[in-house]
Length: 83
Image 1 (tube, rainbow, N blue to C red):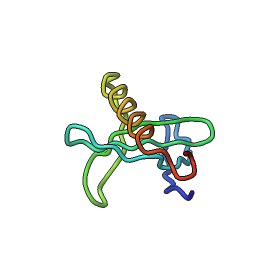
Image 2 (cartoon, helix red, strand yellow):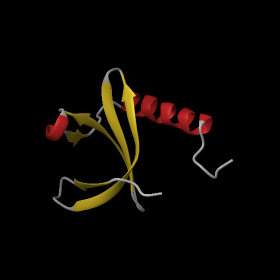
Image 3 (cartoon, rainbow, N blue to C red):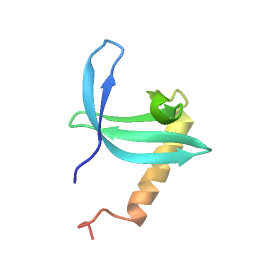
């Protein structure tokens, strides 16, 4: 399956490519789950249209809630070919 690819720049200025695993909504906020061969990132989407940017999520309870919701969704609707 082909994923959209996003380039993320870390605090040291290194750019890394991530595939978009999922887009999530919670409390009228948008989040994106990004994966590559080494890491998984969950980031908040801020802004609208062409002026969107990804920012970190400092609240651990938000991260836990999003990951729990994603896990439940994946269990309820497995990807094609995973039955």
